[in-house]
Length: 317
Image (cartoon, rainbow, N blue to C red; front, side, top):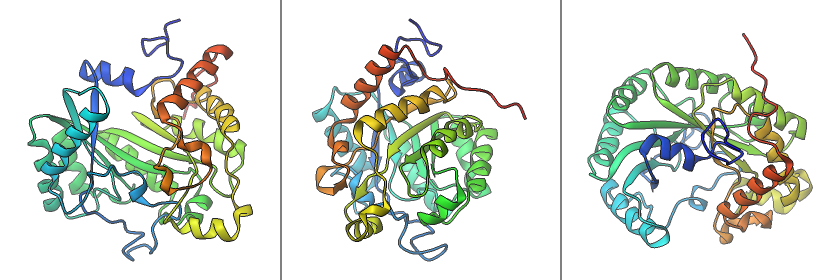
C-alpha cells in the first residue's frame, strides 16, 4: 500500500522526507557551540530543565572548545565510520538554546557552518522564548539560500507540566514562536516527551491533536528517561514512586495510538529517546538502537493495518 507520503511505511519518516527534499541521504552533524539557556543562567531560573543533561545526547566529537569547522570535519569522519557516507550535511546546532545570543554572534557561528562546502543547511535547536525579531529576520533571509529548520522544545502542551519541569515558558510561547517561524517561511521541528509527571495517557494522546494544529514540519517523540547528571536523577533515587515511566511494550502501543492521531503531513523524525548506557538510570529498554525500535513499530502498525493520521481530525477555527 502506498501512503500519501509516497512509500509503504505506515508513518511519514525522515528518510522519506529527506529523499524528497534532498534527492538522497542527508546527515545531521551535531555541533556544540557554547550556548546556555535562560533557565540555567538565572534570567528565568537556574538548574535548567529537570530531565536534561546535554552530555547524554552529544557525540564524542562535540566540544565547544573546538571551532565549528573542526566539529563539522570530525562529524563527517565520525559518521563515515559508523554509517554509509552521506554527500550532503546539515549543521545541527543541538546543545542548549542555540539562538540565545546576540545576532552578531549567531551570524558568526551560522556563517562559519554554512561556509563549509559539504553543508547545505542548518538545524537549530532552541526554546520558544529565544527568538527575537532580529533573529527571525536573519533566519528568514538565510532560508532563501539554504535549508533552515528551527527545532522548538515543546516537551509538553500543558503549562502545569512546563512549570513542573522548570522550562520557564508557557505553551502559548510555543504557539507564538512556531507561528512566527512559519509565516517567515522557516521550516519548524519540535520535541515532545511522554511520561512527564502528572500527565495521563489521555492527556498525552490529546497532544497529538494539539500539535497537529501547529505549523510543524517535523516532530521528535521521546519517552521520559532518567538521565545521570540531571536534577531528576537525584529525585528518582530518593522517590522513584513519583515517576511513572513507560514499559517498552506499553510505549509501543501508546506511540502507535499517538501516530494514528497525528496530522499525516508532519514528518516523524524519532519515535523514542536514545542515550549512551552510562547515562541512563531508567528505564533500561531505551538502550536499544532507535532504528531497531522503529522497525518494531513499523511492523506492528502494518500488522494492525493502521497508519499515521488514520484517526486525525482537523479542527476548523
